[in-house]
Image (cartoon, rainbow, N blue to C red):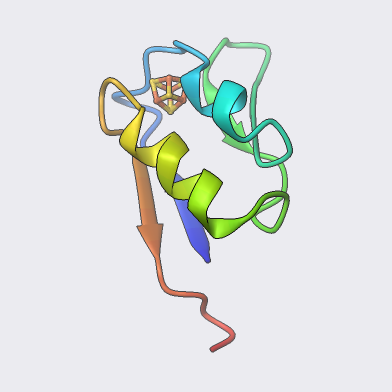
Amino acid sequence: MEISINRETCMGSGNCAYWAPGVFDLDDEGLAIVVDPGGAEEARIRLAAEGCPTQSIVLGPDPAR
Ligand code: SF4
């Protein structure tokens, strides 16, 4: 799955890193980054995206498919 984060709107709540810690982390600026798009089951990644308070996580199709 393709995962992108809109860092303009991310507020650094950390919800995504809570739901899918293998996929998301916060960087030195306190904003979310993707550390490994395959680091969690798709369902958890979707939960993380739905749990983002600013809807900054955009999921797309896996470019390899
Ligand atoms: S849940 Fe959304 S606002 Fe919070 S850190 Fe992750 S991307 Fe940023």
